[in-house]
Each structure stands twice: as structure tokens, then as C-alpha cells.
Length: 459
Image (cartoon, rainbow, N blue to C red):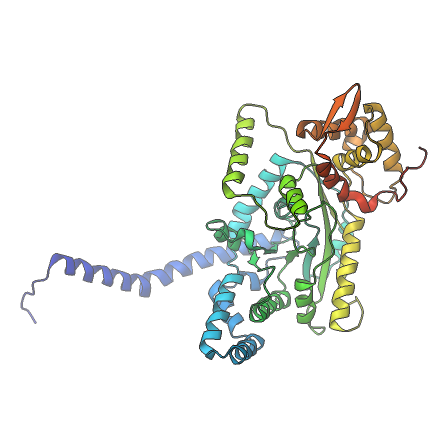
């Protein structure tokens, strides 16, 4: 026992390293984790005091625990057994597929990442790119929502800036959990998006087992009171107008709704822009009749560097106005009876109608519609037509900057001239040849609100 034992230096270092790791994992790491966990819990408690809807325990649960809960859900387990039998594969292989899907879907929410970084970044980016205007919102109806209800913000999808804008404008209400498509599954962006509570979905997947796992997660999140945000259209609008709703996520929410449990309240949100940053990409996809967007990460980085250079050299201009309106909430409990499929279809239709009614009407879409309808006009004639068009839309939520039609005309034309979508010749403003599809893209955003007749009243 007292004899000296000689060891090679490398083996001694290896033994000491293993001992240090064992000590840390058994004694130090649990204490450190407990210390930071306690600090996080106190920080979240302080944060919840100022939020309209406190962060629910479901969102704060550890990601590992949520994955285990999801893969052991009875409906998911039955789906895995059915899949194994149908495909003729061992049960453990099907179970591993479920585990992979669960790891892909389940987020890892971080209150620090969301409120310490995401909210500040969203506020900075939104106000750097646009003049943000929060228009209509029924504050009394929003505050009257049952505190125990699950709130789901449903929005039209105009741009990837939608995520940023709504995150910023809903910062004092709650932490939103988005359903995010395949575009965001790029490292390290995916890690950041998970930390902000978003969950990834395969929009075009036809795999029944995957859909069962996704449906189970949506059901757990809804019953757990997680505040969510979703796009019923299922993707970005390619022509600028509102698209028919997709029923996927709405169907999962209706399926998972428990009349004896929490109510589910949908809040319609409508967004519009004087400039959609991806407009050329979207119109190209519409022209090619496919949704394979050809934007590369290098191209995006190049455009960001160009905007930074314009800012450094004092030539940067914001991209006009961005408008957001919040509509009248809709309770699933009071929506009515019927079969699951009928309720989902009626719910989707009602939500899209409420969204369409509150789409913000901004200067660029208005002027684009006027020029496409009436051709070359003088600036005075554009202002005159704008006045008459606004008067013909009494129920629309029109944003006139500074409540001044002359300034609104100038602001809209300035954006269109800067983009090269219109030109001035002979004292008249006219669309540039070959750029009409972009003008139509903006006019389409308010197409459903425009008067039906070719001529406006009084013309």
C-alpha cells in the first residue's frame, strides 16, 4: 500500500482529467446549475410582473424533458407502433424516428435570449428599416381575454420581417412561439431561433408519423397555455395579396382542444409594408410558378453589407412605412358546434376575413393601385385620385402620414421613384416598362379593399 508506483506522464494527466470531470459532474456542475437556475427563476418572476400574459411553465420546461414527454405521448406511441407495422420495421426503429422528429420540432426557449437579445434586436431592426406604425387595436377586447386562455396570434404573411415586427410590438404582452419553416434550419441561425421559442415544421411533409408527432406537440403547447403566433396562409404571399388558408396547424389546434380545459383565443393580426424586402424574389417565384426561392445566404449578406455601407456614407433611407393592426379576438369555446373538419374550415375562413378587414392601407400600395388603374398622372392628379380613393374606402384602416394627403403622396412617390418602379417624364408619373409586376405586388396587398368598379366615385 505504501510502495511507489511509477506512471507515464500522459497516463497520470489522463487520470487526473477523468477525476476532475467526475468531481465536477457529481459535485460542482449540479451546484452551478442550481445557482443559475435560481437566478433565472427570480429573473423570470420579475419579468412576469410586467408582462400582460406571464411566461407559462410549459415554455420554461427543459428541452430534454419536453422531448421525452412528446415521444412518450400515448398517441405518438400508438402512431409509432402503427408505422412500424405498416412499414414492416422493428418498433425500436420507428421509435428512433419519433425521437428524431421530436428533437427537430421541440424548441429550447431561453428567457434571456428572447427578452435580453431578441426584443432589443427586433426593436432596433424594425425602426432601422421602417417607420413602424401600430394602427388599430381593440385594447379593451385584448385585455378582456381570459388570463388562463391560450392566445394564438394569426397573421397574414407578407415578409420574413413579419416575425421581427410582431415580436417587437407584442413585447409587453408575452413571449411568442412561432411555427418556422425549413428556411431557418441553418446553423447557427437555428440555435438562436430555438432559443427564442420557435418550433420547426416541415410544411410539405406527407409523412404520417411526422404529422402525428407535430400534432402532439401543438396539442401539448396549446393545452399548456403557450402563447403562439402562426400564419394561416402557410407561406409568404407570392403576388402580394391574401392567400387561401392552409388547415394544418389550425386542424391540430382544434383536434387538441379540450372543452373542459383552457379556452383558445385567436387574435387576428394584419401587416403591410411600403416595401417588402423580398419582393423581387417573391415575384420571380410567382412568375416561375414555384416556391423554390433562389435567394442565397451570400446574396442576403451582400445586401445587408450594401445597406450598412449606405448608412456609413450617410445615404441610407428607410423603406417607407410598415403598418400593423390587431383585430377582434375570436374564442374557440364560443365558435360553435360541428364536426372537427367543419369547425376547422369555418375557423380558418373567419380568421382570414378578420385579417383581411384590418390590413393596413399605406401610401405605396395606394399609389401603385392608382397608377396601374389610371396610367400616367401628374403629381397633383395622383394626390387628387388618392383623396378620392381614400374617401371610397371608409371602413379600411388607411394610414395617411401626418394626416396630410400631399405628404402621403410625396412619401409614396419617393419610395417608388427610388426603387425605379415609376419614372417622371413630361410632368407626369408613369410605371416603368417591365416593372409593373412589382407595382401589382404592392397594389394586390389592398386589392380586396378597393372599390369594385373600374372608376372611383366622382371621376
